[in-house]
Length: 470
Image 1 (cartoon, one colour):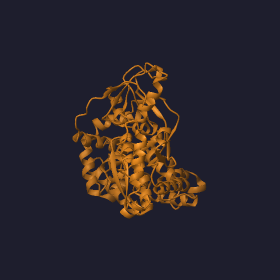
Image 2 (tube, rainbow, N blue to C red):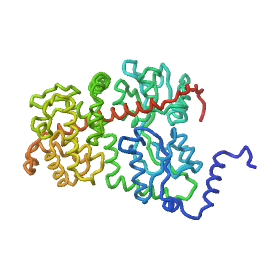
Image 3 (cartoon, helix red, strand yellow):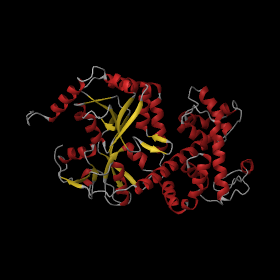
Image 4 (cartoon, rainbow, N blue to C red):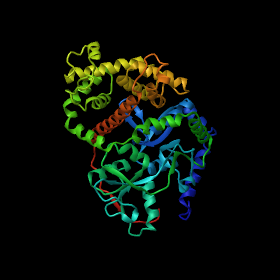
């Protein structure tokens, strides 16, 4: 029998050592032999979620790439939060935690972390219109954080300095859900990582980050420290390779690049139009999307950028309708009345589908989507010209991040005189695509919330935490 006085950490380490003795193979070889990497993650916009075309999220893309490098499949286990994920890895329920985990000194005692792939700060979130707190001392309202999170731990650290600081702990919601409670006015404040807020502020344009509670902290994958390190070393090598070959910066741009340009007025107006205008046309986007195998939310986002969902819109250059088709394009597509929403949306979906098919299957889905959207705006020929320029300048012609840098060059004689299709307002095409990326993300978020609401089970009320050492 183990004495009650034996520290829990020692018991944990002993258990892991005993488990490691049961198999002579290295951890890496076990993963390869079984043909799968068991990954403990969590559902969030910054980690992993199910999109219309399969699994998505920056954390998922990173870990999928690692599994591919080992020649194995990904087996996902979804934890409710980071604390649960780390508890599961300590009980050997998975091979690695990839859940947006911050590296802390306490966690480094029993976990091995890969080189960090991103840095985040903890931010206090409040609703615009309320008085902005400038420091912890200014907090005057209900503060709620996710249970057993690094945010809760930070509050315990701050309590020694701010003795009047109080907060509630929510055992059912994560930080993304709590952002929604701030937006609805059910709570006054919450704390979330800067990356999470960066992606979610488009969904909640009324919210603001008041101040940071920490210095930047690194995010990394976590492995049990006291077991064979072969799999961990393979992950370290893979992470270093991502940084060196530019893959990591490409993924960061894919998920966060468009989120840097936040337009409060435009986003607020868009959210209002989703309520007042979109319902009238949503079924048309859905029907056209099914017919031409295009995500209806992408079609709707493109239509909003084109016309703000106004079927009678007309531009100074003569393009018309909800999808703003030119007369030549409408004739090519067989659209007789550009102001008819049914014809316009179906025509736009058909046109986008034709462009999509022109691009090679080797181009990754995300990049192929934004190259196609840019072509819808500026023309396929100009995008092809830009791909050639991109290659000439040492970039990757199959990656939107590199194309985006070079599209504005189509306005410069030095470059457009070298192209087949000549001058174009490439900078406007960049803005066009980035706006649609934001509109699309918001529609994905809303439709996912609609789905979750149908499966919703009543949330239990939060429990009140009394400040004490963790």
